[in-house]
Image 1 (cartoon, rainbow, N blue to C red):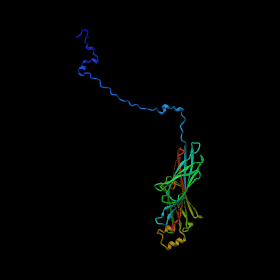
Image 2 (cartoon, rainbow, N blue to C red; image 1 turned 90 degrees about the vertical axis):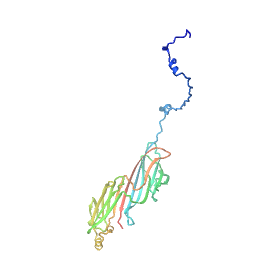
Image 3 (cartoon, one colour; image 1 turned 180 degrees about the horizontal axis):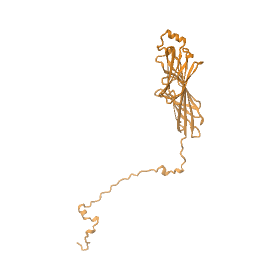
Image 4 (cartoon, rainbow, N blue to C red; image 1 turned 90 degrees about the horizontal axis):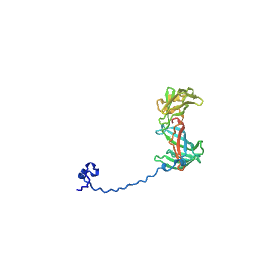
Amino acid sequence: MSSEAEAFDPFTLTDADDLFTSVVSPKKAPAPAIKTKVRSFNIKPSYDQIVDKDKLPPRLLLPKMDVKLHLHEEVSSKAVFGGKGEDGSTVEIFVEGKVAAYVQSSAGKLPPFTLQITSPPISDCDITYQNNICRVHNERKTKNEHRAIKCKVEPPKEKEQFDVLRYSMTAQTKNMPILVQSKATLKESTCRVGIQIRSNLSNKGDIHDLSISVPIPNTLQASTVKITRGDGTWNECKRLITWNLGSLAHGQSVLVSLEAEVSHTMAQLLADDDIISSTKFNEKIHCPVLVRCSSLSDTLTDFTLSVSPWMEEPSNLSLHQAQSYRLLHRVPTRK
């Protein structure tokens, strides 16, 4: 050994000179480095990072458009009697309808809009479109044979109501907004007539301007007529009783009645023929009934409307729709 070798000092060992580690776990050659590829992502800057919003022009907003449609129907109807299964529940109706519009827009002018019409499957439904305002774009039939019509509507002036179209149709239905029942009974020589009006439960709203008129036939003596129920008026010159009942809530009913002595001719027939308990009595002494009413929330047909922006001139469109009808219903003398 060389005398010049440095003295061994166990307290000056470093981690690299750890004898125990060198003996128990001898050093191994370092493992080769593993090369890995780092994928770089091309992250685009956001719109807010590259654009100064303060220097941009204001965004183009669609014009706001408010369309108000009013569908009104004038209806005349008559209960059907006499045929097979015709007990008065089937009603013949004739309808004349009109669609009017009122349009407002935030734009300088009123842009056109699309009107979609669904017409009931009635072959004789006649539709007349307002000239220079409503033009048919296309028409087709739906699966249930309804007519689906698409029209272009060009409003003439702002803040002015205008007619869009008119229609008329004739049909038979059992779904009337009111149910009218009339019955006559005889006690000795006095005839008593009762009329009940019921508002259909399927109505959307109440019935208004309800009135009942009953002409007194010649089979009854006009001088003996009495109103026994309801606040009615009797016009002897016209031989007419009228009840003005006002409004009737949907699903509710009202009953009016009258009585009168039978005529001398009818009294003789009653003495000669036993018809008092016969169903023919209502046919021989039957008072026709005339009912007038109106509604501000219903119609009698399946004529429906909807709107959307015209494809070439988009707008932010909103629709407000109103429906109404005025009805004259007749329950004629049974034959």
